[in-house]
Length: 113
Length: 112
Image (cartoon, rainbow over all chains, first blue to last red; front, top):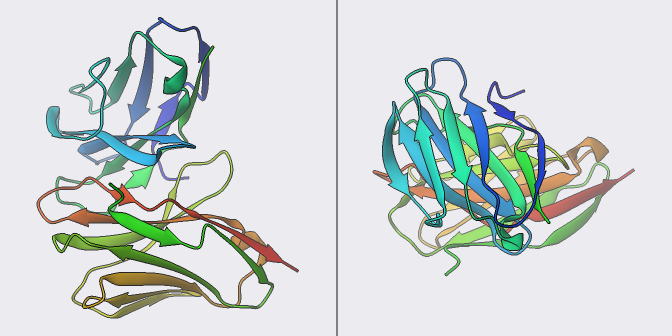
């Protein structure tokens, strides 16, 4: 158990809908990362937050957005969902910006029908 | 553009044997190279990591070998066990950024 929690574990929704994925980092970790894992794209970095501020962006679609709250939990919002958004979404945390060791949560499996 | 190339895609090893997974990179700004282990239905778990100032790092049965001039690094699993059967990912990140660039993964199966 990495100490990173993610909810929900599974999510099934229809195309065009909007969902919110939630992540709580390990106790004391200030940095949160979101990754997407799919069969065709592999594991890809989406976005990073550090202590409430966006720090880095990767291959994140404009339909996707994220935020980190004062209690350090983070939410990833996915809107106008398409079939191709079906994937595993992982949150990871590290103790600080520049803290290279990232610990991953169990993931949320999103299925868009 | 795939920045970290991983091979093989799959690997079958007998119990007690050595499993070797290789990764190569082009970006000389990479300065942190972790390996992750992922079981089905679980998140990637950090296994071992190395920085380019050392050529080898060992933790238990797991060893990373790093060749800076060749821009290659590999994971060696000694005395492989059935419980090691999982997918292994190499990754890399640049100095001044924390985002991990992952390889495509290697599915390891260890048979008794």
